[in-house]
Amino acid sequence: MILASQSPRRIELMREAGYDFRVVPADIDETPLENEGPIELVGRLARDKALAVARGAAEPGELVVAADTVVAVGDEVLGKPADDADARRMLRDLSGGTHQVATGVCLAAAGCAAEPVSFVDVTDVTFYPLTDAEIDAYVASGEPLDKAGAYGIQGAGGRMLVRKIDGDFYTVVGLPIARVARAIAELEPNRAAR
Image (cartoon, rainbow, N blue to C red; front, side, top):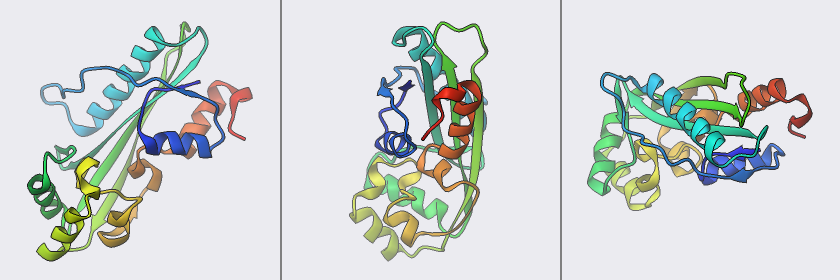
């Protein structure tokens, strides 16, 4: 099995679920298409990543698992902040409101004529209203700078900023592992997690 991602969080989730896999990051253009919404974007990117790795790096029959995650406020996708000021802007946008985190997943078997299995899982995340002092302290921690939407649900961001979530916590982390495990078990019953 191949995980087409070098995300430390996805690698950790797959290992914790008991899968034996190798990591082969996908090299694709992740530029959104014109008029492409966040849900369509993550679904397409996950599929493109899975197919690129299945065609280029996988052995025949090897299963490729790929994912892509975005934080969205309406139709605006919040990527990783460019700098501290950008992180502050994003956190002000998220303050006191509800936004969506969508993770697209695609499983493709290399050299197999079967259609890849794809899905997008969406979780609503609601933030507490944040003061400028809270935002400044969180940005100073350094945590927001390598995270889409300028926060990490599994770190201090989740403990200090998030009032509630409606959906799968692991979708926000970057891989809805229970749903992925069920998809793998349907595709390859002998390869189910232990």
